[in-house]
Length: 504
Image (cartoon, rainbow, N blue to C red):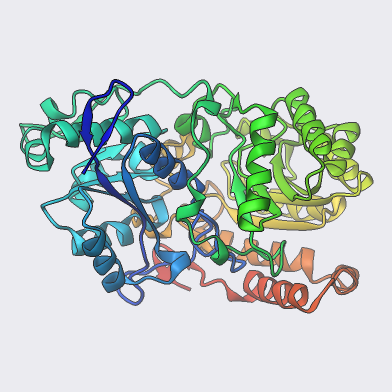
């Protein structure tokens, strides 16, 4: 079977399986982590929109793609093996992140077949490509933005074949213009220079949602509704010590045209009966003028979509929030992080406590729901600063909060600080997630102290009588009640906490 490219030259159609791997339940300690495609602490299942972009670019290049979201579809190891065999791909690409890397590498080893080429994408594969290749036995990893790279890998398979690439990856993968790591002839790992980030995001096709199990994606904020994630921009200019967003997607903020976002929202409504959207980006308001243009375009299009987003507290005004409300926004999430200005400054967050007060107050005045995220255990944290943060959360009183334990993900400055100071208490990547787990101590606090503080902070905020009465009056339906009950129980009582890799 062949297709014609724009030059009229016949080319072979490459079959690619793009996989969000299943959990090896009961074999590897695995916590439910909040990542696209994984169940989160509140029980939602997030769509793998980033992988759907890879699928769309491959289809646009004329290839066939099988999109396997194991977590959403309830596919186990044997089901995955059967799915791969039935599709018989030339190339298999696994997605992985730090907390799931052990699980995902083991899954790859168990379903591996040498007649196919195997690769990894995702944040962990981007920051630790050599370790990922050695642990999983894969043939390559793609680093950072992978849309262009994966098409070039498919082209290399067309030209050379799987066996030739495995025998001489340096020669056969030379046409991949950066952003790839693979074994070299000397037993080492060759890492190509980072490729340039995609400047014009609108040149990418919309995510291949026709391949996704759209009906399986749910979250408590949209009870009983299918929801989707839309990626409106990439890049983060800030250098917070605990975050690797700027490293993975670059420091330059690249935005899509408002009309492109409107068209994506329209297609979700018309083709998938989906009118609930989460804008997945580090900050929808990084460029407030562009945000206003997006809102005006949504209003002009008379879309029925409800949406939520993230923002920095220093990027909003009351007028902008009111415009966002008119455009269908219902909730804004903010990284408040700490109630101690000293902790914020040491972490290079570049916000003030007053800016957080203003943002939460303006969000309330605009008629929007607010969500505030806090991090406990950043460098300099003490029992006193933790109490300041708990008191501050109650003072600004957002509609919802979540307290995370500081996690030094590889690739962040926080990881280097923790490692350099001897604060890391485990090298088990499966423990590196923020819900009920602690993998480092600080100058003044143990990992057990931080887990206890997280529990205390959550209960201090949510178990107030006035707070509980407010939630009861805000219940809109039976499904809303069930969602809130489930989420509340899991958040307050259901986390399996651990320190140093052992269950608490």
